[in-house]
Image (cartoon, rainbow, N blue to C red):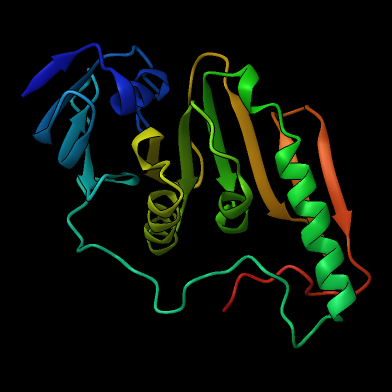
Length: 211
């Protein structure tokens, strides 16, 4: 079992608090397939010995001592507006506005970037940055899809994936939430009270993540 300060991808653990006890002492013990930069399969333990499973580089922070098999999605998400439910002009307008909003985010001003919400389309448009990226989502199948997107964009070596609805963290990071609010609305929110980029469509069900 390895202990102590962490570097590179494992550095993400430095900012995370244990979901059960809230401990964020920057001190974790690691067990399993561990290198100097990442843990592929195994467990992480907080100082109070709460154990959290890592399966194929996804940290399962929603189920202590998780033992379930690796999960995949039967229907990969796209994050795109449904062509059957919106006009093509609306769809293109949304994509242009969304890409512009993502590209304008202040990535370079922060060392660590936390991405939560519904990040599939966001990851497709996100520029390549020399930062640590922490992706949080409750659906492991979607996280597997995001791993594939990151690999195609040659960003995988900077990314960490956590299965959870949210996490406790310490320190200054760029926190981005991507979500749908109401009908036909997509919002990019920076931090708890930060600047927001909002786009509203004219019809309901504009932002769908199905195929």
